[in-house]
Image (cartoon, rainbow, N blue to C red; front, side, top):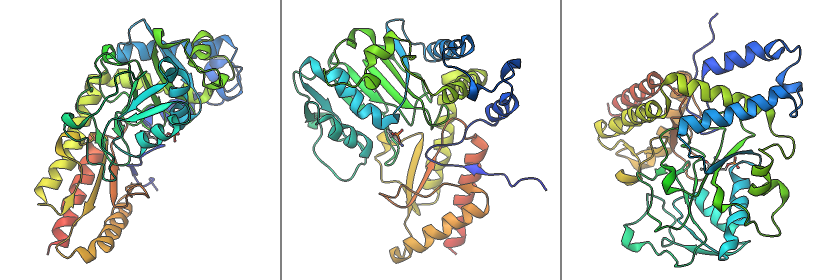
Length: 369
Ligand code: PMP
């Protein structure tokens, strides 16, 4: 019996391209005729050196990363970076500006408070629906860096354009929209991303940092979080997450074969457009709280708003159960906000999202009868 087709809309770890998984399966036991698995290989071997350097080169080409930026493959996830960023970068003035647009940037700011003075650029809020107008943003005159989360995975808030920081280095958490659109590196000091959403398995965290920002870590910065040491040792200071980096390298090949970042961006517009358009066509039955200009192309949270609001929870449960029955999984909203969330990472195909949009329309029609 053929396996049921699963459409995975999970927020991460998330869907990987089928071709990549097949390739991994094919070469798992005997890597390129070496007689051992990549899982059993020394990180000091020539073979792994080739993977490490090759992955860096491919990423540099895909993103058009200038030569004065270092690429690091680290561990500790996005959460590790919440500490690494201030430990490596706040030392210049002891202060940093944080633009909090959701829970991930809020957590990063809280972590940074341990290492220096954090200025909150935006007025405090509990409802993350996109940043307020620019005249309400309050930058400090002497921040070492300005921090943003480019795409807030839980609230579905994404920057449509890079904020202007007036020359202060901009640091961006791109964990959930990394490699979904081109990046203009002239506007950033550093970016980072956990791999487990768009580019590979959990375990590797990518950091891309401008060279002139190195050599400034606080004395308390642990070696494992120290960008300068990791850059000096080409991400081989200690044992790296070899398997995750190997799979990520294959995902880079896949993205290139699909047409690169321009194509990933085009698909993300098409995919998110299908869901947002369905919300419009169903006349408010589905509602996304985020301001139009800040709506994410990648993570779309929404609620069902029936005429009788008392029925919301029941209908949302029914929606999720019906989706599961059709093989559409991991659509439940983050536990902190509830509702529904569709994550449309690179490996999620346009046809998968079309199936979800069709299901949303059918569910609406049945519920409105
Ligand atoms: N930043 C963002 C935008 C995220 O979505 C996440 C995790 N979902 C994190 C940081 C934290 O990443 P990790 O679980 O790898 O620590």
